[in-house]
Image 1 (cartoon, one colour):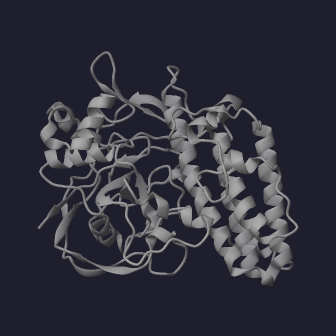
Image 2: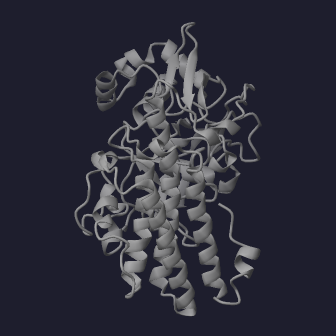
Image 3: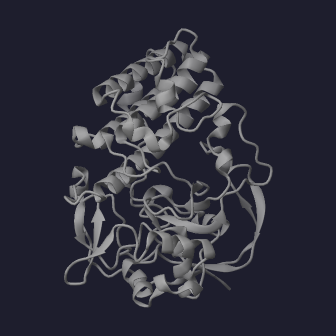
Length: 439
């Protein structure tokens, strides 16, 4: 996401302080990007909910708007009146302390409010946020600034969810719909760079958010952790390499699988990654946001669960990295250098070029990378007081940590300490594999 500079800031400096002008500009950019992702959707696409874990596009549009309305406007502007009294129940996600809500599996039943009504809701809240920020000027409370920044990062998370949820819904349609922006995709058939092992010395090292700039509460506090010497794979595991696991019967050999993973594999009849299928000639195809197409062997394998990633690493005779090992590996790399959603491809790309000086490619963008670390609190962590304490802390159970972002993530949203988390059976996110081993 570009930093708001130039005319977007200068045009407002005469009426509001520079700090507020920057916030307004960033707010406008992020909200506009969400709308841009929906430009090519048909009316019926907004309503799709293909599984309980996903949400309709129009719910994402309304929920991110409700976040600003409830936590910013209603909490800090005594003159603000909510757009609709029932929207809090319709578009509250999981904040139990705020009030009752529609269950997540039933979000697709909400044919009303209509898409035009939700777009009007977004405009009205945007107008109210702009007006309130402009009026407060230098008197903008620090708490409101923090909520605004949290809300923008929250909306960027939902931009990614819009893409991943749509992909899952479109994949269930025999017509194999094409998400129009994905037509920009340029599928590479180049041979990927050979995978090498990159050494890290270990030691007693600092982990977690350093304290400068935005960070979610689950990235803190900064603390010490001891690492033994280890190695990371120089790039992500490719589709071709993963087909080796399939061809070797990896999905049918329990010795490679955790007990829970073996049970899920059996229950859901996993034979390959999500969105893979074979054509009549026995060749692998993949459903993408750019449509159905032949699988590119050199691209990173994606849409695998933690269980599949772990089973592959065992089959390969190595392991998955811990989140601490991944974080140390990413230090010094530039998070904006990865392949992100702004490229308009929405599919991981081959690591055609040799890694840089540090020897690691694809650390950011392309695929979220499963780690072997359960999602738990850092030493000394305390969730924020109030409803926003429910944002991350209450999910620190039965989830695994992923790092690095994906081809559906907004550029500028990631950093070395960013901790994503999903249940180990999840496959609908762009999740891939980087290997690690002990020295």
